[in-house]
Image (tube, rainbow, N blue to C red; front, side, top):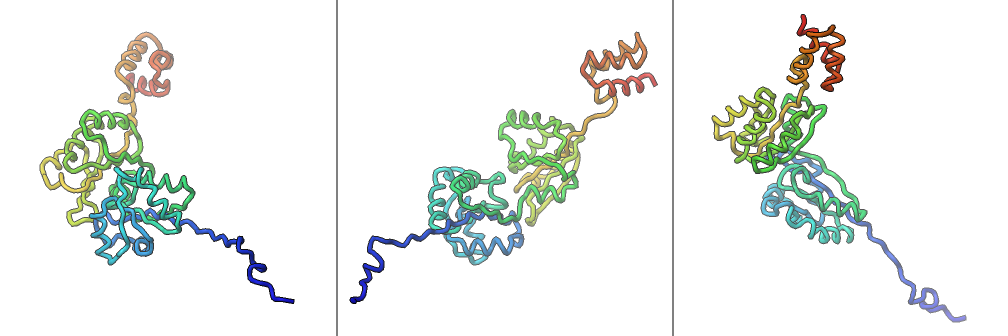
Length: 299
C-alpha cells in the first residue's frame, strides 16, 4: 500500500481559522498638577498600550517624557473625536490596547472622550477606567461643605445672560453645587452667584489644586467676591467653585408676602385654626406652616 499524500490527509481547501481578541480602551486619569499624583497602574498601562489618544499631544508628550514613556500619541479632542473614532476602533479590532487621556485629570469630566467611549462601547469592545486625580472631587474633599449629596455643573455659559439663567435654574438646589470656571471670568462669575444665590450663601474657591500656588478659600459669597477682587493673583489658574446648597427658610420667612396678607386678614375675622386652614386653601401654602406662623404672629 502506498503512503497517503499530504493532500489526501489534509485537503488544500481546508483552512485554519484564527480569531483575534479585541483590544481594550483604558480611560486613564492623569495629574492635575503634582506629577506625584499619577498611579503606578496608570504608568504601567501608558507604557504597555499600543497607542495613547490624547486631548493635546503637545501637552501630553511632556508628561510622557517626564516618566520616560515612549508610547505613540494620537490626537483625540473635541473637534475630531467623532470623526476620528474609527482609527482607534481599528486598533482595538486588531487586538491592540489604547489609552485615553486628557490634558489633566479624568477624561470626559469637562474634557473630551465621551464620543470615543460611546463608540467603543457600541462596538462591543471593553472600556476600563483607571481612576486618579479629578479637580472637582479633590476640591469637594477639602471644602468643608456637605459631600454626601452634590451636583457638578461643569463650566457655566461664558456670556452673562446665559450664566445667570443657568444659576437661576439651580438657585433652590439643596445639594452642594460644584462649578469649573476660567480665570478671566472668575470674578464676574462669583458676582453673578452672589446676585442669584444671595450674599450670605457659603462658598469656596479652590484654585490651582496640587500646584505651587494652591488656594482654598471659603467665605460667604459677598466676602469671597470682595476677597477675589482685591487680589489679582486669585484671578489666575484653574478654578473650582463650590457653593452650599439651598436651605428652605423657616417660620415667616418661608411664607410669601401675599400669603401673610391673606392670613392676617383672616386672623382678624376668625379663630386661628380656621384662619390657617382657609389661608392654606386660598394660597396653596401648607396648612401646618401657616398655623405655626399664625401662632407666632399672635404670640
